[in-house]
Each structure stands twice: as structure tokens, then as C-alpha cells.
Image (cartoon, rainbow over all chains, first blue to last red; front, side, top):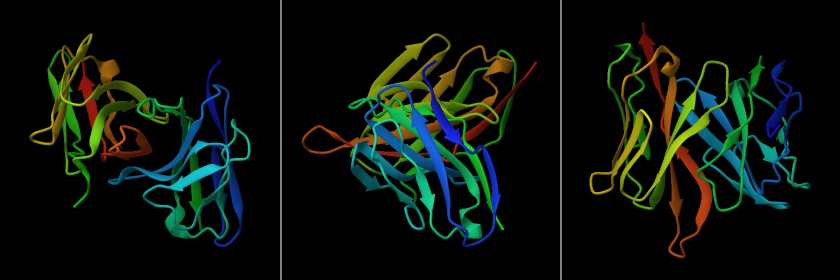
Length: 113
Length: 116
């Protein structure tokens, strides 16, 4: 089944404790992206990657890191999480040149206390 | 001012009603206009997309783009309880060379409930 998977689905952590949210897709898509979704603010793009080793900032990159060493994986790293990073996170992928058609993962709900 | 504005609702309609969802935008570089649907506790999924101006129809759904007014709409005819979801407009810009930066901008989402 073609899909985007994210792990973990739920995470509660404390301020300052480094964490990684993994994202993997099995559709051989070149493009991958991370979003956060907050009430009243909609989906905001954190980082995106047009291909392996090519990443760029979205609208809200502060406090996040990404890497794209393999085509299928695009982990999101929070080096020192803070409470304002409590949010619902989505990973997405799309074929090159069809960025309008994003395939989203199921989401990761992160709470930072 | 946000690049994309969408009335968050919530919007509640009876089954069979015509629903109109709208977004306005300010960035003239936007060329692709999308509507995503998001069910509760799920990731968004693409419903329709339009390139540049005009209308596009798919079953009960019609997407309209008016670039002169920087305004897009999604119409749902004969709405069903299964249409109850959050609807997100999204936009994608292209550069002078005709390629996309890959940076999507979403509206805040409109929560729609269709009651039987």
C-alpha cells in the first residue's frame, strides 16, 4: 500500500530533551515536507526537501532541523524542544513537479511540558 | 496580513445544501490552487487542484479561481454527512522560469458539518 508513515504517533516530552520524529514514504517521491498544524493557524510548512541532500526552510523553521540522506526518509529533529512546539505535525510527500498533490502521513501529536 | 485568508467557520448545513467555501490571497506568484479535505484525526488529502484561473468540476465539487480578485472558492452540491470535515485551501507559487519553489501556503481551514 502506498503510504507515508510517521513515528511516533503521540509523544509527551519535557523541555530541552532532544527528540526525532521519523517520516518514511514508499512511493519513490522526490519531494518531502514537514508541517505543523495549530488551531486558528492552519497548516504551516516547517521544512521541505526537493530531493536527497536538498532541503529548504518553510515558513516556521526556527527550532527544527531536518536531513534527507535517503529518498524515502525525512526525519524532523527538535534539538531542544520548548512548550511552543506543542503541536500536531504532519509529514507529506509528492512526485517531482506535482507539488500540488501532497500525500500526508497520519500525524504526530507532540506535547512539550 | 497573512498571504492566504480563510474563514474558519464553523459552518453547519443541512444535508442536501449547497456549500460555498472561500479563500483570499495576496501573493500574485500563486499559480496552483488546491483544496484539501481533512477528516478528524487524519492527515489532509487532496480534493481538487486548479492551475491558473477558471473552473474545474469533479462530481459534486466545483473549484473556482478568480485571479483578478485573488479569490478562490469550492462549491459542494447536494452536501452529504460524509462531507463533514475540515477543508483547507492551499496555494503554490511558481517563479519566472515556470518552476515551483515547492513551498505551499495553506489557509486556516474551514470546519464543515453536514447534519442529516
